[in-house]
Image (tube, rainbow, N blue to C red):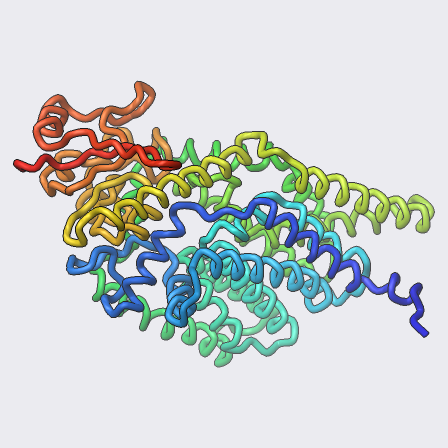
Length: 507
């Protein structure tokens, strides 16, 4: 006979419920941003035998920062799966893995089996950015999972005094997914050095050296190939998005402040300082090191253009763990001065009520508020660019070319050689010096209209004369040349209306 009481006392039952609610929260967003199609285009060219290139027949350009994600997507595309669907399924899958692993983190690292271990998974399930970027089509959740898995395995290994190459391989996988994984590994090396030093052990013991060399050798082989293939130390996006100096830092600080002020719960990380007097304080210090260093990196690069604070998603599980441990430490302190049963009942009731309230709000919101409205904007951009791309695929000649803003979906569906007017996939524009860098939208500041006109693409998508608030203004000479070369081209079909500029026949 099934004992219902026994089931209700099992935290894993509630973990399953939290996981299911997370899936519903993610599906409530259910979008794929235009940038995801950049990866899909690289994957398509790769499986068709052209290599990891943007334009077939041209010099390879590293217009991506998610190598492993492209490889994974390309494997599914090779056997006939649609990348849009695959990216959503994988995103939700890795998000679920993160929620489960955050729960297991408390059992493995803090060696505690308690209902309070559900606090961190519940925070993630309720968190808008974590849910949104499970269906955004990008590598965000896969990167988040590899970071969390690597961090968990590393802490488990050092606590059991058996650091192995397994955690090093997980750090490699994170670094192959996004280059910021190198930062995570670097901070981990720093923590490991001082951890061994304060434990009165040699930081240069055989096991540690093997662990370190495992990462260096595997990633070094990849870096050697990458540098020889593309010719630059950093991905092309680095050159296209950075160089704003102090203005870029100010923009990064604003991005950080907006994230904290909008969601507020990251402020509760401060409660984790209450745990620094406990035996496992080294793990807390390590998580704090990772969060602070990653946040500093986000500030340094000036934040992100995409909505729902995408850049903070990889450290949200670490933040959730610290908030959870802070809440538990606060409870333990209150138990000393208030009746234990009252404290436990109050905390469980408060956490449950907060979880239900936030999740109901998350599942019923109407995309109001700047971060949520940004998701609607991304949806509209992807739909519009997809429609343009499909039209061009039907009507343009395969040997024609295109220049555009928002190059993802339009280039993926049109299959035309495409010039990125923002320089993410164009070496020349990415290395153009701009006097206003750091003052505009991240990733939308590089321009070189003269260069684009010189290339004479057959179609030109996007504005030529920008709004007054724009930091970029084409010169009179560029406007004159543009009018000589191009004419407006209007598409007015049932359920499809948009405009392009088309190269004149005599040009």
